[in-house]
Length: 135
Image (cartoon, rainbow, N blue to C red; front, side, top):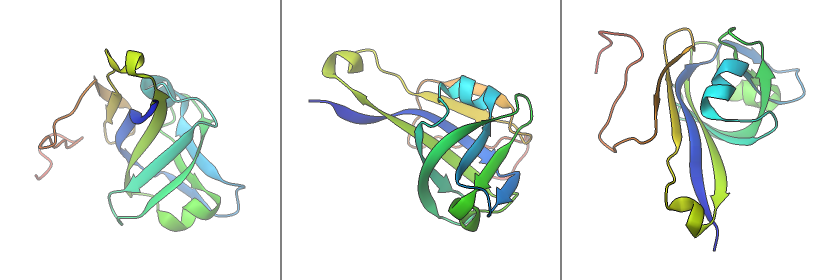
């Protein structure tokens, strides 16, 4: 039996653009895609921390080092520049692959630059990208 697992997550990225008339997808800085091991056109689930919206789309690569997080097409209606998102990528894993499985969790700073990489998270863990941010 294969199991569907969260293989990677970009936690707390900030939307920089919303382009309603673009064909679709979410544009993500190539540095973030690399950090999370997400490929262009890989299917994603996105949770908008600001609005509570949850949606699915695919990744497209944005310019490296740009901090780009662009909601395109219909997803532009589900978030606005400044909204914070959790971007999750799943994968199918065999029992043998799960023996040493660890998801890639990428935390970012306020400019959507990779700040910290983790291979696990605790249910009670919280994270604020900016030092001194309120709990």
